[in-house]
Length: 205
Length: 218
Image (cartoon, rainbow over all chains, first blue to last red; front, side, top):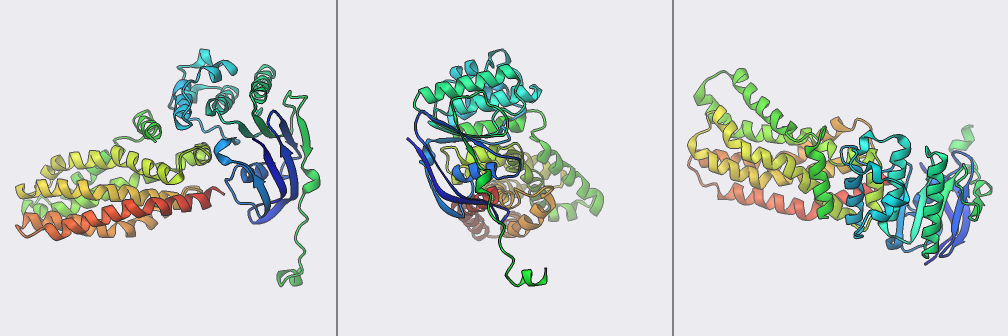
């Protein structure tokens, strides 16, 4: 199981934001994408996840092996923590939510409505969903936002366990993840050059 | 798929889920009509099938923007799109959940509301049958409309404008079937047309909804 991205160009709102991005992640490895706000990390991840098409280049990834986590956690406020996780376990055809609950220390919150959780607790629930999917490729966008230091450690532990089990992870962030061993790719150098205004509109500028 | 259906049903009946909202709206429409047209029971019984169908259609419309917009807002739609379920199955299940929480209660309540409008006795059976056959089409067409407007903030009004014209055939044949039966005429043709529309819509529209959703998720 690996993830290969070659010469990828991604666009947001019709404008190319990153071009010529190439990287490879193999099983047991984590790759952290770094870069300033607005550089295109989220767009890149959404393209890798297949939520939007690439402008150019290729993503070699079996999407049936991938689980994606975006900025929003996809949590239903009226459902309890257990109901939220059990739903995703059923959708992904994995049985138990015990591991995920343990990994993110959610057992005391089991019967709490998700709407009553704090921002950090919601994020832990969102991350626990990734464990529940049982998929070997994790594509995660800013996974540690609103987590405190101990929860960041829980996350780092969960990623290490995932990698040790033969999984791989692609993470985008601009803050520390507590994963010192992960490879880091700065996406800044891939910033797309703005299109030259040599067309009809450009003649008027 | 069953998990998704159960989740949507559970969300509908929990606080803020909007279950019963359509039914209450239906009741209000039906109660308001006699105030508007006067308590002439002959006139009321004449327009009863049309009013009941129109009321059902409008209350169906009321809850359409909940089908996909809530899932889009909290990010679950992105997550569902990357889940093992195909989007076609997701929109079908969502339409079914909408019908079970909105359409089916309307069908079951229609005879009671018919009483309020002095619906002729011969009309009860055909009205319930026509609603039972017709309302699934309303949910499926509505899901298509919801998929079209999913990325828009406050897309509810646009959704109504898009969806109402598509409801016209169902409304015409549904109300016509009830009216004909009341007048003792042959009602097989509108029944078949109504069933045909529902079957075609269920067979074809989920693919269109899923395609539209894929574009809107970009």
